[in-house]
Image (cartoon, rainbow, N blue to C red; front, side):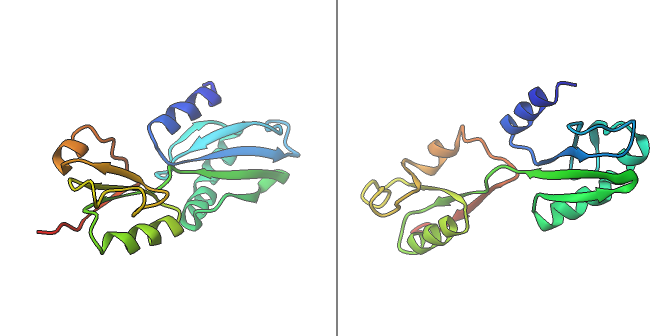
Amino acid sequence: MDTHVRIVELLEKEESFCLVTVLASNSADTGPGQKAIVFQDGAIEGSLGSTQLDSNLAGLVQKAFKENKSQVAEMESGVKVFLDIISPDEELILCGAGHIAIPLAQFARQLGFRVTVIDDRSDFASSSRFPNCNVIAENFTIALRDYHFSAATYVVVITRG
């Protein structure tokens, strides 16, 4: 498995995963730089060189996923690993650009969301009302028809009707 190619594939699919990299090791089977990809369900692609180490990864990775934080962890046999949690940016789609959408978009941006605002009224759906947001002045049905939704996409419908 070419780890770098696989990482690119996962990023393009906007999947969450943990890239585990050996930083230091006293084990003959496991050398610094070895990598494995671990998913939230515990599935592993690649190996750290030992089935024992691979089987112990699940618990460490689950903890890192729960904390949503990359971290260094110590394993048995003097193996130190870096657990790099890689997740797509969370995105908020606001269907409706009225008065409620303005503070909601600002709040979502402060939390780190990518924000898209959609409204068929171009005087409401404007970059001046929604700075640092993707703004689409279009009917919801048309704008969302070919939209790529991922597990990190949230949609809020706040229309005038």
